[in-house]
Amino acid sequence: MPPLETREPKGGESVRPPRRNRVVVGLGSCGVAAGARRVREALDRSLADLGVDVEVGVTGCIGLCHREPLVELESPALGRCLYGDVTEAVVPALVSAHFREERVLSEHLVWRMENDAEVPAILARQERIVLRNCGRIDPGSLEDHLASGGYRALVRVLHEMEPDALIAEIEASGLRGRGGAGFLTGRKWRMARAASGPTKAVLCNADEGDPGAFMDRNIIEGDPFGVLEGMAIAAWAIGASEGFIYVRDEYPLAVKRFERAVVQARESGWLGRGIAGTDFDFDIQVRRGAGAFVCGEETAMIASLEGRRGVPRRRPPYPVEHGLFGWPTVISNVETFTNVPWIIAHGAEAFRRHGTEASPGTKVFSLAGDVRFGGMVEVPMGITLREVLEDIGGGSNTEHPIKAVQIGGPSGGCLPAALFDTPVDYESLAATGAIMGSGGLVAMDASRCMVDIARFFLSFAQNESCGKCTFCRVGTKRLLEMMERVCAGEAVDLEALEALAQQVKQNSVCGLGQTAPNAVLTTLRYFREEYEAHVIRKCCPAGRCRGLITYAIDACLCDRCTTCLRNCASKAIHMNGQVLSLHIDADECDRCGVCLDVCQFGAVSVR
Image (cartoon, rainbow, N blue to C red; front, top):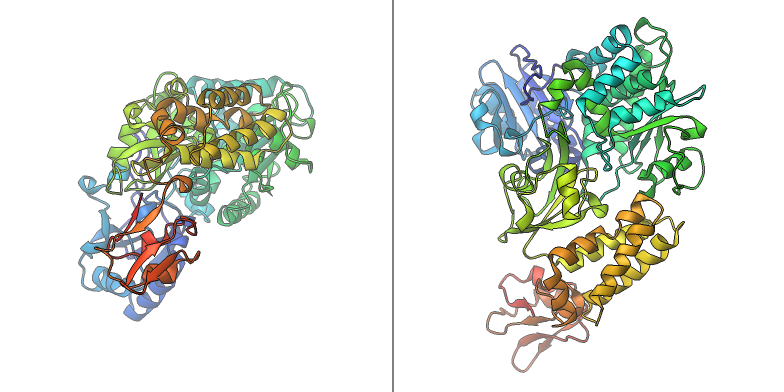
């Protein structure tokens, strides 16, 4: 199946297939979860009934997760049209309109793909380097990858570039690791090349565990061969013969596509011995993660791959000197490796034309939370948070404005709307107390309690602590206890809370413990008035913290339908038989909020 075209950065190549009848279904995890497999089956039935010769293919996620299931239809008469929110019921009318009646089904049209003026907002501002093939090609087809320019970079490297020249090109590009730390990729490669050892390894960290983050998953599901090619280029640079992919076991579709891609690449000579007619030998094994967030830390990942308990160790030595099985090892994440073939194909200067001087290139983000256009975006470094959230993400999807964004997963930080003009680059975000992280962006509207948000992310980090070091094991537990007391409106010394958070940050062994307090520290810094409301005024301004709210029923608005009574699991709602009115017993109520959700008359309120 030829590539599906999307907007690309300047200098990218676009492949326009000849016109014919064609259907492409988005079968990434987001599409599958929305019912895309059933849509694919309905398409097969409807096309058979219609009796039209139509080529049917699949692709990964193009990034418009909020419009899934997505289906692209192409015909000589109408060209290429992308339709969204396609259900089984819609399929017969869609197929008939496009292939028989030769008209666009406008109520489901997302994009008339030849018309740049109609590009969806979430795509219009993007510059797609990493996501260049996602939503364009069949991720299970090596032929599609080759047709889109795949493996040309590896062939060039093996036949035209010495390892030192290759490393110099990556250094010139300024590519920084996209896994969170932002370490210069070229410098890491040069250190690994200089390290001594008969065997060296390249390890892809695909253990994406941040809540609200799904960048690596979508890249793997949409372009697994791009990751393999980047790993092979890195292996040539440092002299590695062994490659490993440590992929999150909770991503079954990503695991399946990685495993299939490795088999196809091996059978076609892109992995194994004598790659591309050279004496370069390199092979890759796919290993499923152990299910622990801490195994995303590189030394814990190495321990897990070696069959040991996944806990971090102090550095030095660094993995580039003494890594997997004692070999010098380069570890990068999915996004970093996927950048590499593009840089080799287009040059370091082309890469540096995107982004900023200190943070060149683009960054992939997953947009989630209270935002209209949730999904995947790839934007140039240096773009502001406001542009990502409002111009690309469409702003709030609720009646409330966005008041904060959580960036970088539980290890990141929560930034207020007043800082939405902050450029998205490593240095600017670090100055705010947050970090880039792997690239999760969770928008939160004005109805959210930032104290409760910080408690949630701290709870996640505390649960995922490996327990090796005292400050992470005990410190995060004490922090969480203090945060739970704040949420309950109990007296808590906020200065002591902040001091403990700083101690955990400064004294933990690995990145998980060092960044675990970030959510607390940033919300204390930017939303301190909400903490003070909890501990001084004994109220939650957002009405979210269960210990500080009560539910009540307004007799004037109540219809006496008893829906709330029948749905109350704690049996806290009672009927006064004499006046036929409903009331909530505050002592029996567990404040689950179900009564508020099911009331159709607005009679239930939070106080």
